[in-house]
Amino acid sequence: MPTITPAAAGLHAQQASYADPAQVDPNESDGEGEDGYVNGGYHRVKLGDVYNNRYRVISKLGWGHFSTVWLCEDGSSGGYVALKVQKSARQYAEAAYDEIEILSRASENSGVNGHQTYPTGVVELFDYFEHIGEHLDSKGQPRKHVCMVFEVMGPNVLALIKQYNFK
Image (cartoon, rainbow, N blue to C red; front, side, top):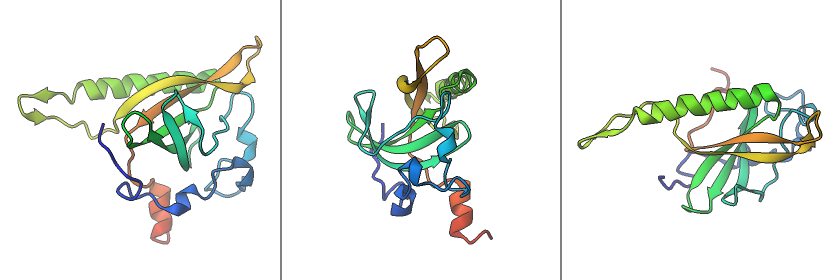
């Protein structure tokens, strides 16, 4: 796994400005809103949390309808990774496992042939695991959030649009 620093990844302080979901304006496009933190929804991630005994949360990178994404320090390599924490409802977990299967197959097809590596042009999935959440399902069992660990990429499209004043 390559070692990358936040600066080398193009990460800036403004990306960490709303790590607490309670401080996010749900009407603002930059935040997922407090109403998503319900049974079957997002998992509350806090700065400093450690996932899978390895990934320490440093700042929030973004969010989407299915998940939130966090910059983490990898305790094994000392490098930085992006941790995607999926919502816990069944349909989101199924989508996460579909994504893992697709990314794993893409990775298998980027192997080394002699001295030439064949890149896929697809983000690299380093690891995945399930994290026990705070909510219970209908049987009283704790809900699980599928977590995926990726290489750190550059800013998302919305961040780029905003950076260039929607031009």
